[in-house]
Image (cartoon, rainbow, N blue to C red; front, top):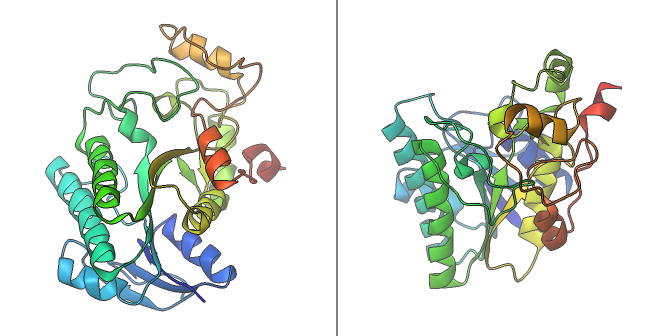
Amino acid sequence: MAKVVVTGGSGMLGRWVVRHFAEQGYEVLSVDTRQPDEAVCPSLIVDLEDLGQTYGALAGADAVVHMAAIPRAGMVPPEVTFRNNVMSTYNVLEAAAGLGIRKAVIASSESSYGICFAIHPFGPQYVPMDEEHPQLPQDSYGLSKVVNEATADMFHRRTGMQIVSLRLGNVIPPDWYERFPSFIHKPEERERILWSYIDTRNAAEACRLAIEAEGLGSVALNLASDETSMDIPSRELMTARYPQTTDFRAPLNGYETLLNNEKAKRLLGWQPKHRWREELK
C-alpha cells in the first residue's frame, strides 16, 4: 500500500483529499499547522517553512500532495503570503527530492493568471482560458503560484520528479451549494474568477489521478467544473462584464466553463462529476 503525505490536510480542500486517498486504500499522513476536525488518518503538526521538519514529515512517503498555503490574497500582509507559499513549496519539493519521492502534486491557482486580485482590473485575452494564457499577476498570492510552478519545473529538471501543478478554480465543498441561488443571476459577482468553481470531491479525485499517472514531467493543469457557477449563458456573461474580450475559442452556446479543463481530462482521464445544478436538486 502506497503512502501519501497530504499537506494542508486540515484545510477546506485538504480534508477532502485526505478522505479520498484513504477511501482508495492509500496509507495517508495529514500534515498541517492544526489538528483536523475529523481524524481520518494519522496527523502531524508541522511548520513547512522549516526544512528539517518537512523532511521528517515526508520520510517514508511514496508521494506528496501539497495543499498547504495561505489560500488567498488579503488574509495576511502580502510579504507573509509570498514567503509562506513559496518557501513551503520549495521545502516540500526539496525534501521530496532528497528522500527520493518520485511524484508530487501542488496546489496552484487560477489566480496565477492575474485577473482575480488585480489592482488594475483587466479581462482575459481569450476564453475559455487554457494553460497557455499569459500569467500576469499584480499581487503576491498570484505571484507565489507562478513561482511555485517554476520551482516545480526546476525540481523536475534536477531530479526527474513528476510534479503536477493544479490551477484550481474556486473550491466549493458540498455544503456551500446552498449559497448558489444568492448569486447565480448576478453577473457582477464572481467575475474576477470568470465564474469558475471546482467541487472539493472532483479536485480530490484529480489529485489521486495525478499521483497515479505516469510520464507527465512537470505540468500545470486547469481544474474547473464543466460549467460556470451562474445561471446565465457564458457568452452573455462575457458580453456583460468583459465586452473587450472578442477572442472566443469555443462556441459557447450554453453555460460552458471559461477556464478550459480539457488538458486535465486528457492527461489524467479526469471528469468533474459533481455539478451545482444536480447538487441543488
